[in-house]
Image (cartoon, rainbow, N blue to C red; front, side):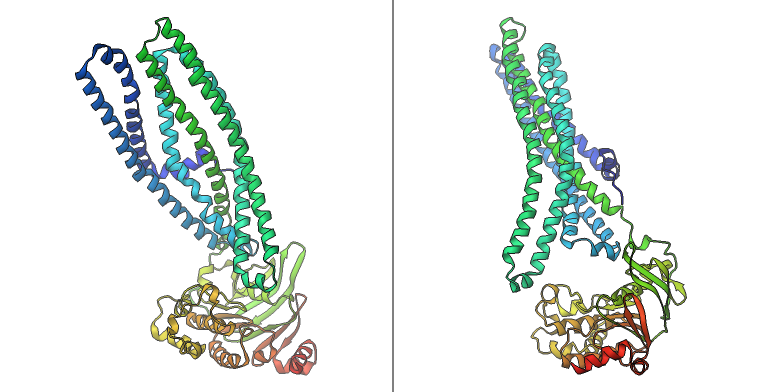
Length: 579
């Protein structure tokens, strides 16, 4: 992971430079619009010193038309800038969000095990918002303000060098204060992104677990947890507001000193001595306002850019993470999968020096069923995760058809993989959409075959909308058994060569389990199948049973062989039979 900060230069190279043609058009519009903004203040000199004293009506008409046209030019350029830059900025935000989301989906499963989904949503949706200020309104204000300030300064020096230099002193002092404040604000904004992600992550968990919260009468407890989060966020915002308040208050005093104290005092003195005409005084006043306004505005832009770069810091962290497919040299492509798998002295640890598996070795023949049994936490799911390539062993080797799985291209392997989990995830939508998930273009006959194989039609035939019934978030409108049958139908439709069933019948009642056992018997035919089961009655026909205890294989064999040994498996089986 990269810890470097996103600089203005790197942001320019990656975000602005690829869109330089649009940006150049935007800059041209900015120049035209800002040039037009000088017409009105500069016309005041002619109005006060020439037109009014000489009562020149014709010149007055021309001047009014020119000023009106200048405002029309400003309005048109402002509209076009919104079309060119602001809309482009919004498009870039959408584009960047899509890129970040794609990147996140390529990360290893262990990343998601340690990261809240709500926090990731915040990073994908909120952190990229700052792009708007880099190429949209922020760029317009920054470049336009700089042009306005520089041109105003040149014209002010031409009118009165002495007055201009006097007004510059408080402006320079304000700029120094603002730069110091920005250095303080940037890490605060960076922390705010993290805190915001944490708070949103917890809120997402709370809403997702609302039945558990209500079931344990824990609303008040969750409220206190959320309050602590928002209080932490408030304290962060308070820091940035304090720094911003310093800039605002200093700008009020210093810019007031420049525009009022010096202008009124020194300007009035020069007018009394005849060194400055009334028209020149008014022209100087309005030009000074034109110069000061963008300087004040740029202090706000500085805060926006600081927040934008802090968000892009966090976005770059995600984009620089190693994708799952980039871990090791995954260059082997599997065109066809026969299904032979082998674990050779495999050891695995989620944390250093805390091994979960110790020197696991076994072979799985193509088309056979291998069952993993044992107490909770013994390492069964870890073995299944390694077989699915969700995890990589620290020691040893796993092969598929004789090829080291750590060298195999993940897409070429997983297109032959099917997974049914204990608490399988269903997407909000219809039953049909969830079953079609692995193969959206499957035919209606293939869909119906999967539906019948998993006995999904046993309950969908009773629904008014049938397969088009909406199931709610995570399938909340269905029973556990119904959800599990949909998950199994999804696996049937995927037609995988390698199948992993992690407690696939655990959520089923006795009647549903009997139906599913029939469908699973069909599903596993000709497929290499890993079955994790607590109900040992469901794995009697497995070709090989591994009893896993404390990360090692305690026993192995068929059901009859293990019963004959009267060891750990025998004890587990007879205990369950008595219940």
